[in-house]
Image (cartoon, rainbow, N blue to C red):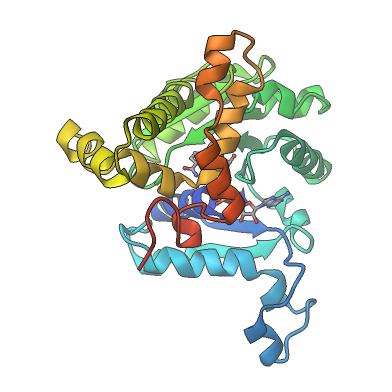
Length: 308
Ligand code: NAD
């Protein structure tokens, strides 16, 4: 019988930190891992720290846990639950993945990066541990193409929506080899333990939620540019006025992260052949130029809105 006593989340950004918080909310201890920073921050140098100091090596996950306590609306039911999340890094702590029952990959939306990470996970993976990806729409099949059959049986997509504590939906996406018992367990676990509403989706580009959601956001963005509307005007109409208290177009894009959104739009753009559909999923220049400038949304303090 499968039990999730302990989990690991790899990638401590917008979604990884939120998923870790939600697992902590329901009493599951979480190991939160990220990459090791390659440069010291000014304050780290001033404090006499070097790149091999654990405080520096765990900086990304540590900062993410700190941020969870300050974010509003709160990702954690109680600030104290942050103690259930342990920060680490992929160099020093990868062997600890053998001690958990569920590993969730939540790194950058890029197939090669995910494949590399998954082959690293497989090396320390303990048979029986479920491994899932929070990808927004990269092929689950492609991620484990070169993995063993046994690993593939334990691998699936579990796609949480942003922010994980508050958004009800989780898409569960099996690959063709996923053990049906693991799919059934994960659906039940997400519903009963995590309080989510589960939709099982096929392994098609961007699954269901983001195939439709990305389409809607891109069409709205293009209409704004063509119509000369302002960001505020469009948000006033597509938010509460449409019965969506929190999901106005540009607030949503800032929350998602414009860099991530471009990757997610490209998941479909790169794979569809129908010219009309390709045009829909092509990211407008405005979006690309904002990403080039580093205006990638709330995580950076500036997107369509500037954090003051
Ligand atoms: P993010 O940019 O906020 O965070 C990514 C984190 O992964 C960063 O902390 C980064 O340091 C780390 N990372 C990058 N490459 C890594 C590697 N090779 N190994 C380990 N860590 C690495 O991104 P995010 O918004 O949290 O998105 C993460 C995943 O979740 C993506 O697959 C994305 O498509 C998906 N997702 C995002 C949203 C959203 O609204 N942002 C919603 C649902 C799903």
